[in-house]
Image (tube, rainbow, N blue to C red; front, side, top):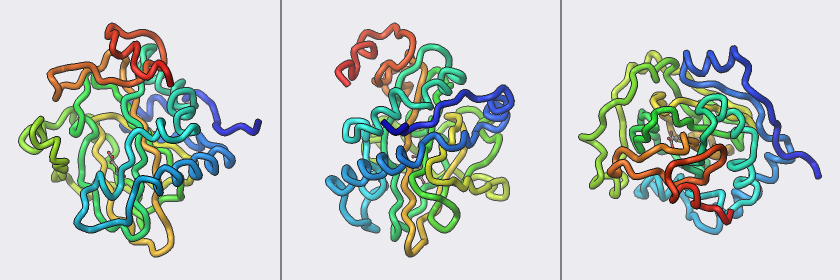
Length: 259
Ligand SMILES: O=C(O)CCC(=O)C(=O)O
């Protein structure tokens, strides 16, 4: 069978860059065949669940398709057994679980921006070494709403957003839009098939997709320590499949065992 994924480990220099800058483009994790298969399966899932972009709709309705690993074989295999897992072991340690899998698609015509935030603002996990990974299914740049990032911003640590997002507002899908020094922001342009990884304190946002012809499709996967708990949810364990090592939580050990 033709290979779908490119496996490798990070070099010491790359690990250093991740820790110093809070992010790293780790290059192509998907082969051409892998990109083609993942895109095809993702689009099938997308079309069966999503409608056209609506200005009045929420970010979740317009741009997110959650649990893509339950809807695409290639996404599941990439999430659970793909090249990111070895790299997560280098960053997080020997006990790892999947924390989130979703498509974040900004199709052409979706001109909504997504405000500055830390991923640990929307879902604070402890320990604080969770890693977000964004794998591009399209080339992405300023025109089609690529991510904008602030190198080194993870050094600020957890920003308190409890006045914006808490257990009541979270259900209403309130969005975070932090005030930042925009002069420090750079675009994180990517080629289709590449993966960008970043720290859970790392500040990022994106503008709308103003291209007439190009979608901006991203596979968003997050990984965490196998014992990571949800601070905003009475410190209950985040449920996600155990991918490496062990966990002290039986409900995590048995979660998605059948997948
Ligand atoms: O898809 C985007 O442009 C932003 C997504 C994002 O930052 C997130 O989901 O945390």
